[in-house]
Image (tube, rainbow, N blue to C red; front, top):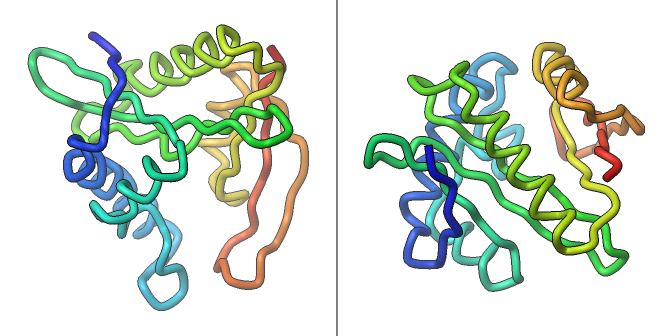
Length: 159
């Protein structure tokens, strides 16, 4: 397994991985284009290009000459790191790839002198919440956004 930095030439590949990885989540939580048009299951190349343009960094995980997952990382004006769009293709899930991508981002954040890495997840997604807790993240709050059909749980990893 190898994790490497992606660039804008990978935009279509990234969008495809993000979309494919999040379709099962969209189905599980009845998310569709009407109730959440910006959900990652609908990710497209233009969104990825926009991410790159605003300075977000992407990393891809390659295994046996195949790209099987990705993750995005962004640093806020206040110095908080944000782990975004952690995505592993469904047929490669539950093999440690997601954990490897998270650990890579935590190490990367530490190398950039970031003291906290934050995420937001679907609050009702108990299995995902428990997975992040197992990795050492702490729940830091909950919020209902009027434009989303679910509550959001915020979590943080303190470096």
